[in-house]
Image 1 (cartoon, one colour):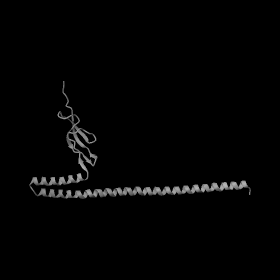
Image 2: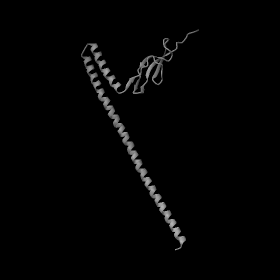
Image 3: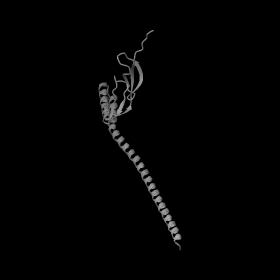
Image 4: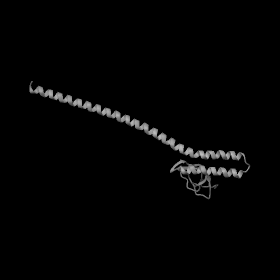
Length: 171
């Protein structure tokens, strides 16, 4: 064999080895990509499942507390049907209401205080404008339906009546 032929064989052999290495590396990377994709998919499914379980547990706790309120309302209704003493019925319903409000407050619910405040579209929903000479324009003069925060997020804006300047009838 001559030296030129040996060099060609060596180059062919090196090229074949390089190709084989690249194919092996590509196969390894492809396998790694498939495993990582499967792991991520499993992680995503597990995260969704865990979030759902957490939500159910959180709901279970609040429902358990509200069951006491539910039981007290049932007792109040039964008691109201058997008595003519309206004052005791009102007192009982008021106690149940305070228990209910206490649970909601403990969970982070707060009423939006807005009577007399400047109208804020993030906190209020204006359902009517009324002429009100004693208040500046765009002042909340009546709360038709209270609004609420849950922690710091507005979950229901207050439905309010907002003052406007009196129309002058100058003819």
